[in-house]
Length: 207
Length: 207
DNA sequence: CGCTAATCTAGAACAAGTTTCAGGATTGCC
DNA sequence: GGCAATCCTGAAACTTGTTCTAGATTAGCG
Image 1 (cartoon, chains in turn blue, purple, green, cyan):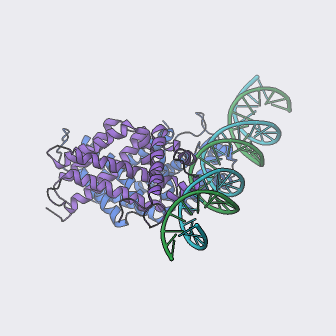
Image 2: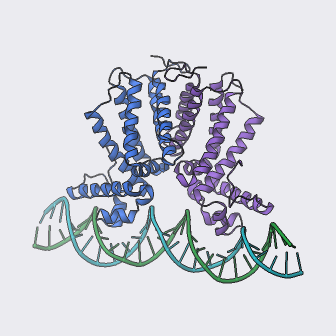
Image 3: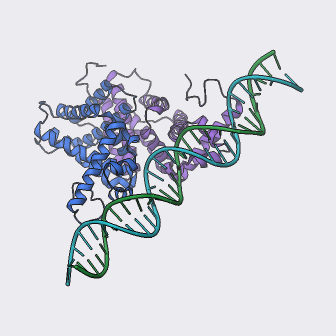
């Protein structure tokens, strides 16, 4: 399976097509940076990336597809960055919280871009599930990387990672819409990350 | 403060205005039940509720406002229902999980309606924050009710409730878009609810 | 090179959310 | 009952996501 969903059809893209796709993603990122979700207008993306509107829709069948792909693109950058400078806290759960807070700082630097990407991600319906799944898998990978290669994660920890992702997205949303402060987001992330180092109680899957 | 945001301005609504508002909410609910978010078209809502389009916009300044208000309306019904038949599990955390699973069953019965309400809730931007906040407060109330009147919740538990709400919304989204099974949603909810009965570790606020 | 299929372009057209406006109906108030 | 302010109606207009069409361009291939 490819790292990202292939735009038009199965065959590999030509060089020019790859370049078009990149121009489109860059235009999307740039417009999102300027004004968030609303500023990413399909006509403007087409113009800025020097591509006809119909072509844009051939590469990304909807605005939401485009923005989810943009998020995937940005996440990949962050993933590489994390490989270069991995979190250094001693505790796995603290490393995960630290990683998410680092991502959060990046979002704060570009809150318009964050707005566009996160709104698209949560607004996506089933027609975008493949692309959203790709983003979700990448996020999971980033969190598991932050936990460290120590031991294989327990079933309980995998459940915790799911809940951490849920909380991460929902906390971002409340922050983006101005209903939660930065401090509140931090508390929420730290709270949910304690799930990683909690003694098993309900579930049957102990380490 | 009123339980719901007043539609046009501050003064209390006349009887006819109250009736209009109710017709609009009912029309919204009915259309959402039929076909989810996309089926709630403002022109159709106006027609079905026998109100001019301009009037609809006077009561609810956008489609998202309307659907968030619809969610608030439905949550109030569920809240009353819970008062009549409160959850009976012995453990507070199990009562919360049970309550959310009951809500989830209601959503499964009307998954189109759930789609419309939840998508609107998470798509809402800052212009809807007052209304979204009202929904959030009501949800918090429902969860705290489920925990029981025993003792006042600790600070740690209040943080846990926030994270539970985050997880609840995000898990619903993944289910609605077909990326998570019913069983998976249940696991996520049960996982996050263990936060309520976890020994304090990071925070300083012990019971 | 010349052919064919796929792709790309420009632009019109369509759909649904939102805004606007002129005029009629209701309401509050004296 | 009459007056002013507000609200409501009906319809058109505007915006932006999406689709469609007809004609270039390009890619792959003999």
